[in-house]
Length: 143
Image (cartoon, rainbow, N blue to C red):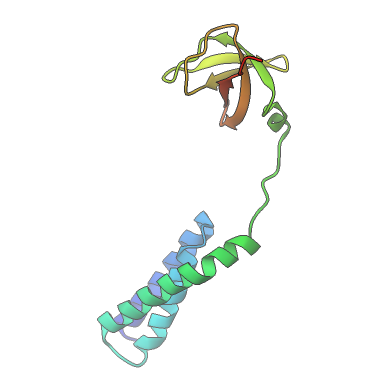
């Protein structure tokens, strides 16, 4: 077994381990490119040729198969009970600025909140999203 064969086997194993941890559907295609380079290593000792085969195959696989794989392997995000606050109106308890968190109250619960604009205490805001443990809000438009 040549050194290049061992290198390609190691690349395949490392790429598969990375894919198992990230699930991004990127390194799996590099691993498949490395499989092709491993096969080529049985016929030639030219590392540049093997590397080119690995890179070209990986790029082709990423470009043409990753979108289909992502579509069919899409994991649905489960909504949690906290998602019900998205779209609701909250009252600002502590002033919010673009650089500082404030606090809002929605459904009787107090939350840390962030916004892209300054919002004074007592203002009504719309909850746009949940970002970790804080709400992303914007000032409600006056009716």
